[in-house]
Amino acid sequence: MNGPYKPGTPCWIDLMAPDQQAALDFYCGLFGWQGEVGPAEQGGYSVCTLKGRPVAGIMKAMNPDGTVPDPMPPTVWTTYLSTDAIDPTIKSVTDAHGTVLMGPMDVMDLGRMAVVADPTGAVVGLWEPGSFDGAGIVNEHGALVWNELSTSDVPAAAAFYSAVLPVSTAASTMPGAEGYTEFKAAGRVVGGMMNLDKAPPGTPPHWLPYFHVDNVDEIQAAAVGAGATALAPAFDMVAGRMAVLTDPQGAPFAVITATMPEQPA
Image 1 (cartoon, rainbow, N blue to C red):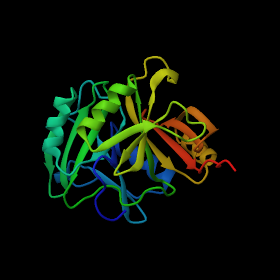
Image 2: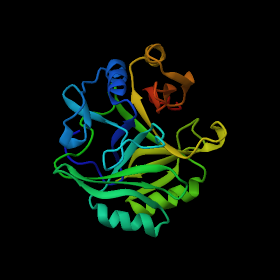
Image 3: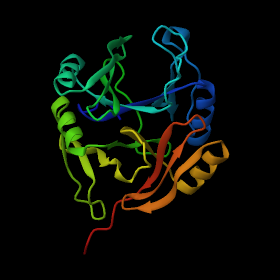
Image 4: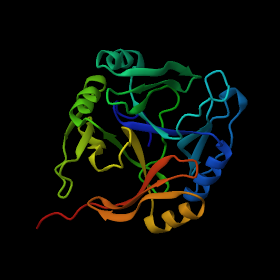
C-alpha cells in the first residue's frame, strides 16, 4: 500500500494486551513479523512490520495516564477506519447515536485518532493520516486481508456507518454468501458485516480482523501449540479456508486462505 486509504476503508489494527512482550512473541512467531517494545515517549507502542512495512500495532494495556487498568479491559484487536477529517467524523458519530470512547487526539505527526462505539456497541477506531497512512502491506501471508463486523442489528449498524463515513452497504451477491452484507468505499468492497445469530450466546458486537495465510491448518496448529484456542477450527467456506482463533491472552482473530469462488459457466 502506497498513499492514504480511501475514507471508510479499514487501514490499521492494533492490540492492547496485558503482557505486551508475550503478544509480540506470539504474533511475530506465528506470522513472521518483526516487533519490539517501543520507546517510552510513545508509551511503549510497538509497530510490527512484515518485509519492512508496518502491519499492526501492539501495546500494553494501560490507562491514558500510564496506570494499569483495574479491572483489565478485554484483550481485543481494534480495527481503525480511515477518515480524511476526524473532527467532522466525530460529530457525525454523536449525531448518529454512537459513543465517543477516546479522543480525538494527535499522535505526534503520525495522524489523529479516536475510538468510538457504534449504536449496537461494537468498538471501532478512526484514523486521520498525517505522516502515517496505516498498514503498508496487506493481502499477503501474515498481513491483514479482511475486517468484519458482527452485530446484533445489521440495519442499524449499516445506517450508522453510512452516516459517519462515505461508505455504502449492500447484500453480498457472492454465491453461498446469502445474508452477508458488504461494506464499500469508493465503490470497492473493503469489509463485511453479519448478524450475531450464529455466534455463541453472549457474544458482544465486535469487529474481527482476518489475516491471510498460505496454509490455515498449519497456522492453526502452530497457534494452538503456542497457547491459542481454536474457536472455529479450520473449515472451508465460500471465500476460502479459514479458522477463528483466540491468542493466549484471549484476543479473537481469524486466519484465511482466501480464494475466489467459482463462477457459473
